Length: 317
Image (cartoon, rainbow, N blue to C red; front, side, top):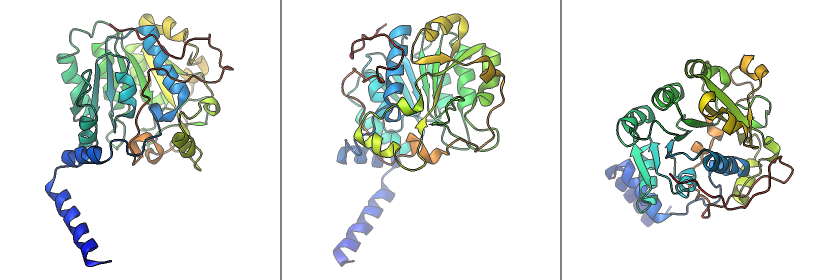
């Protein structure tokens, strides 16, 4: 290696030491605002994107809350609804990137810190007057041994009975083509893990009705990533109190209620068919821009759903 190149490398390392992680994230965005463009929101899965559209359109929440911003791919699609979007990111570098990305997006409020602390503060502040109505929560902050999901659910449903929650990276019992996160004994994202919350808050679980093989990638980059050996689509579960949203969610063709057998069965053993965090969208080293139009391509016509326009009519509150 030449002397100029060595000096340049030393200078870069020195700058990184002097700058904060947040500043480095902001610089990364300024240098490459479209870094890694291609995956798309919701892990680049068309049916999941369409499911989000249908839930928002059919339930009309007052606001959207996301835990686990990462670089803002899914956040950007959420912002296109025109609803207030509150999103939390713990990683300082990712926060700096997302802050630069959304600094002109007026309906996105980005917070840096632990999702549990942030949710409590949000309910005491901006969401206090809205908590008696419907709010949509997307939980994707699970990425370490300190798994916040159980506490997040208790915070949300303890303060907002009419909440609708979608959890990313969750097991879909009837479809092993959907991957889920497993952080070790008692920390797999399966029904058993959230069973206490289901019992305490009288929740009804719903799973995607689209088979994993038909949840097509939304972009060529997502297609290439999902084609990699061992890479699975990401599963999810949607939770709500049956008394508030059970019939409404059951009427969405892209959702199905959990069966009695699934509710009574024990979860798969740790590591049996779950995929470790290394394959989740949180581990991707690239930033991906979300769809620029609120229209979301839907699954194939074979899916049992009525025909509709590609451009959803967002229910703004």
